[in-house]
Length: 104
Image (cartoon, rainbow, N blue to C red; front, side, top):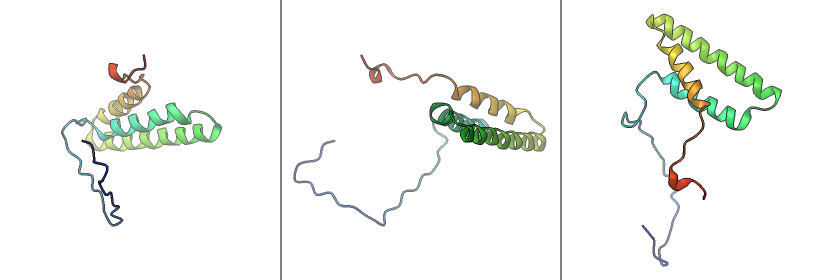
């Protein structure tokens, strides 16, 4: 879609965006997998240097481990631990880009 040269663009300062989660195209397993994958990916890509960042990363692992422990005890299941491990492993995998996005 292309706008014409005479199109007038305006800003609506009171506009609000709402994001409604949909199960379509989403992971259906434990939420900890999505959280861990996103946070660990950002750490390994951008923040994996410096003592303070490593300390924060350790604290994040401790928090996620505590959540997995409590959730696993509550449900008598190892699924939260598997989800945490899977999310961390997925965060370390290289990103596969579509063929059209690669530079020639």
